[in-house]
Structure formats: C-alpha cells, structure tokens
Image 1 (cartoon, rainbow, N blue to C red):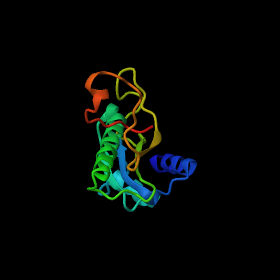
Image 2: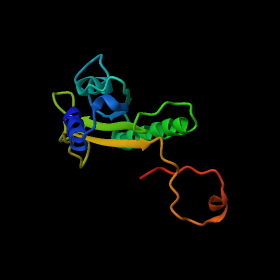
Image 3: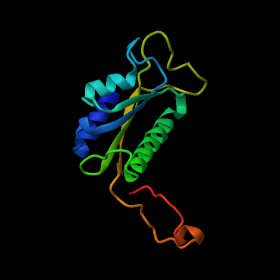
Image 4: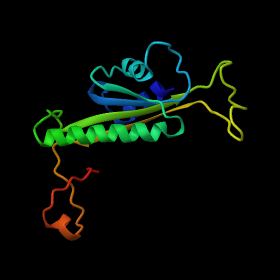
Length: 158
C-alpha cells in the first residue's frame, strides 16, 4: 500500500523516483518480508536507486517522526549545498519521500480486540518533500530584534 501511495504522489507531481534523495518509511506491524527492510523494498519497487532508505518503527507517532527525519535530512543537505559541501541537483532541489503503511493480517494480531476501543485499519500514505538548495533564505518581512539586523538565519523555502 505504501508503494501504491508513493507512485500516486510521484505521478501526480511528475517526479522521477530516481531523483529521490531520501525515503523514510514508518510502520508498526509485520510488513511481509522477514529479512528485507520495508523502506529498501519500497525504494526498489519505485526505482529510487539513489535514495537513502530509512525505517521508522515508532507505532502511533511513526509517520510524524519519519516526516521530521526526512525534513531534517533535506534541511541539512540544503545547508551543505549552500555552504558548498554538497553538490545539489541540476535544478537546485533535493527530494524526500515519506511513506507509511500497515496491513493487520493473519492470526498474529486481532485488529478488532487488540486494544480497548481501537480498531486497527489497513492503509498506506505518501508525502513528497522538496528542498531548494539554490534559493536564498526566505525573508518574511519580520522586523523583530537582531533577526532583522543581520543575524545568521535560515528559513525553510515554501
């Protein structure tokens, strides 16, 4: 399901999976392969050969943690490119993909009675992130203290 969700977001945005720099996948239940990590499987199925596949297994906050991890990775990559330490893409962008997915099948887990008042559902999601490495920091026109008087600042481009 995460692969299907990822293909949908990549197709909708016209993004080549071969341009992905990082892929963070979050899950909580068994993913169906004993020895192959889920993010590596997703990257392979998408054709994201140069992406760094990272797995996050943090139960209910796994998706948020994967998003934070991917955004931090892209931010740091952008900072390195601005400082000249990392070569950016030809269009000045770094790309990250965050996926989540779970399927509660089989006899190992009772989705209806696993917790009090909770029914576990199947699903997959995907979110595409981009960080421009060529763009200067965004100045939102805030005139607040030393920030506006030339203090070092970094802003996430929108």
